[in-house]
Length: 313
Ligand code: TA6
Image 1 (cartoon, rainbow, N blue to C red):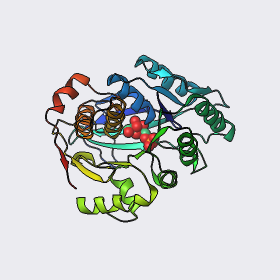
Image 2: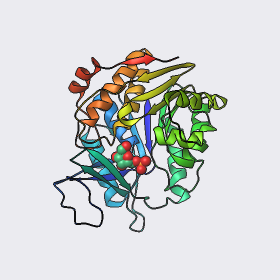
Image 3: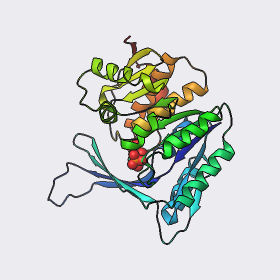
């Protein structure tokens, strides 16, 4: 079984305009609303890849109900914990998409800080559900949980039970998470520089920075690099995954799509090259979509033929 966990899900408001002008009135050309957060996206993408997963997480108030409803509409099995707590609402995130260059800028809310009772409810639920051989996907912002080691703690418990843990976090939640040696981490380029503690300026430097994480014993590192594709470390082997040229509409959510295809490839026992080719294709198809969640599976299948995965060392 695969379980995705979204500690801080969101409703995404996607705001389209031609070009963002600071200290000016910007007229929107379109607005869309969809589901935000990363674990939610991974469950939706897995569904589109015909892989079953159960979406876990914390939903608060009316926004929380909306998030759970949208997940259900995608046909995802949802076991979120929902709370009505003194008017607390799951957060809203805003994506500004500039039609001119299809640049997407994200404005993410922090969301209300979760009382410890709620995070312990979730930990209890997860421990009651997961068993040996399962996969646990811990993704997205956790700044609504004051304990920076929340992902690390979840990872250690899960590994004890023989569960593979996939971690996509940022900042100190990611740094803390390294210590628990998850099966895979999916930093983007900025997060890889943050872990390395310096600006990485070349592919060779990225590979060296990934090698310097060997001390943490993380079998797989998938660094997404926006329109540069991705660099993936699988055991001691490194791959460059070239980007597939498409007409990008909204690149937000492409990292989630890339991670989802890797998880699906592992679940379906696909070999690494084929898994990474599929990941490149799913990420490219997601970039063609206006919204942050989901992609067109038929289109992804077409794009997979264009994928180039190179073993770099
Ligand atoms: O990756 C896209 C996305 O999941 C958006 O939907 C937006 O909600 C944001 O990223 C959430 O990321 P965060 O790191 O704040 O959890």
